[in-house]
Amino acid sequence: MTTCPRCDSTRAELVAESPVKGAWTVHTCPVCFFTWRSTEPEKITNPDKYDRSFKVNQEDIPNAIQVPAIPDRLGNR
Amino acid sequence: MAYKDFRDFLDTLQKEGQLLTIEDEVMPEPDLGSAGRAINNVSDKSPALLFTNINGYKDARVAMNVIGSWPNHALMMGMPKNTPVKEQFFEFARRWDNYPVAVERMESAPFQEVEVNENVNLFDLLPLFRLNQYDGGFYIDKACVISRDPSDPEHFGKQNVGIYRIQVKGKDRLGIQPVPQHDIAIHLRMAEERGENLPIALAIGCEPVITTMAAAPIGYDQSEYEMAGAIQGEPYKVFTLPGTNLDVPWGAEIVLEGEILAGVREFEGPFGEFTGHYSGGRSMPVIHVKRVYHRRNPIFEHLYIGMPWTETDYMVGVNTCVPMYQQLKDAFPNEIVAVNAMYTHGLVAIISTKKRYGGFAKAVGMRAMTTPHGLGYCKLVIVVDETVDPFNLPQVMWALSTKMHPAHDVVIVPDLSVLPLDPGSNPAGITHKMILDATTPVAPETRGHYSQPLDAPLATDKWETIFQDLLNR
Ligand SMILES: [Zn+2]
Image 1 (cartoon, chains in turn yellow, brown):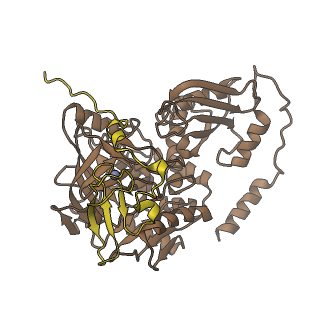
Image 2 (tube, rainbow over the protein chains, first blue to last red):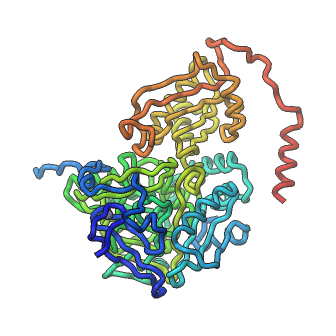
C-alpha cells in the first residue's frame, strides 16, 4: 500500500520496475491517476512536500468538468 | 523527396549536422524534459536530440525536437536547411494545391516485427517520463492518432489523423484530450451517441510529413495522408491494421491499437500546454489499449511542450498559416498576400493584404476569425499592407507603430469562441477578440500623412540574392 503524493489516497499501485534491476519503480494512483517514479525529487514523491496548489482533493474528482461532455444516446427507432 | 520512415529522416538530420546524439547516461526525470526545454532556449536553429542511454532502461532510445527548428522544418520539406521561413511558407502553399495525392497501400509494415497481444504494459514497452514537473503523469504527446467516422467508415478522407495529448494512466489505459474543435471529437460523439466504442490507433515515431499534417487544421473530409502525399511530392505509404481496418503510417516505429470507451470520462491532467500554462485537471475520455506493434529496438519520439517557443510552435507554424491563407484567398483571391499564424498556434495572427477600399482590411480580419481554425484561435488579428512581410516582426511592429490609429483601427468583437485551453478565456472557450488594422488608409479613408513612403535603394534586391547565395555555400 502506497500513498499518492498528489491526492493522498492510499491505493497507489506499483506498475513498473526498471528493466535494469534496482534502478527505480513507477507507481500510479487509481483515484487521481497521478504517476511518479521513485527517483523523482521529494517535492514530487512525498505527499507532505507536493506543491499545495497542484494537490488534488479526492472529493473534487467526480465533479471535474467533462471535455468533451458525454452526448445522449440516440433513440432506437 | 519522401522520407522512407522516421529513421531515414534522422539519418538526413545527422548528415546535415542537425542531430545531436547523447550517449551519456541521463535520468528520465528531470533530464529528458529539461533537455527538450533547453534546446529551444539556446537557438531557433537547434538540432534534434537522440538519447541512447537512459537510466534504468536497456536499449531504450528517445528522440526529441525532431522538427524543433526552422532548419529541421526546411529539411522535412526537402529544402536547404537555411531556407527563410517565408519561402518555406510559399513552397508549402504551392504543394498544398497539389492535393489530393492518392496513397500507396503496403502489404506489410516494419512495425510488425514485434506484436504484443496480451498483458500489455505500456510502462514496460515504452520509455515513458514526466515532461514538466507538475504534469499529472507520463504523456505520449507526438503520436499520430487515427480514427474513422462511425457514420461513414468507408470514407477515406473522413478518416482522421491527429495529434492529441495522451496520458498513460495504467498498464493498458490512456487518457486522451479531444477538445470540441478537434475532428476526433466529432468521431467520438457519433460513436457515443450509438453507445459504441471508437476503434483507434496511435502511431509513434513517424516520418515528419505525416506528423506535420496530423497537426494541421485541414478540412474534416480531407485526408491527412493525401495531403502528406502532396507535401512530400509522392504517394504516402500506409498499412491497414487487420484488426480495426485503420490505415496507419507504414514507417511508424510503434503502433498501439485499441478503442475509446463509450460514455467513460476519467480525471486527466494537468499538463503543461503550448499556451505556457498548465491546463487544470478535467474529466476526459479513456482508451483501452489491446495490442502493441513495434520495430525491434524502437525509437520513442516525444516532444517538449510548454512556454513558446518549443518544438510544438515550429511544428504547427507553417501548417497553420497555410490553410488559413488558402481559406482567406478563397474569399479574397486578389488581395491576400501571406498569413503568419504561428504565435501560440494562431491565437495571434498577422495577415498581409492589399485593400480595395477604406475599411477592407477590417473585413479581412473578421473573415480570419470565421475560418475553421479562426473559430478556436485568432484572438488578436493584426492586418498589415501587402508590402509588409508578416513573418518579419520588426516590420509588423513598424506597421503597428506608424499605420495604426487607436481611434479608428481597433475593433473588439465580444464573446466569440476560442479553444478552452486559452488561459484567459472566461468561461473557458469564450473570449472577446480584437482586430488591429495596421494598413495604410485608402479612400474613402483619407486620414494621416502617408504620401511619401521610403523605399529601399535601387539595387537592394540584387544584393539580397548575392548575400543569400554566399550564405548558402
Ligand atoms: Zn492520487
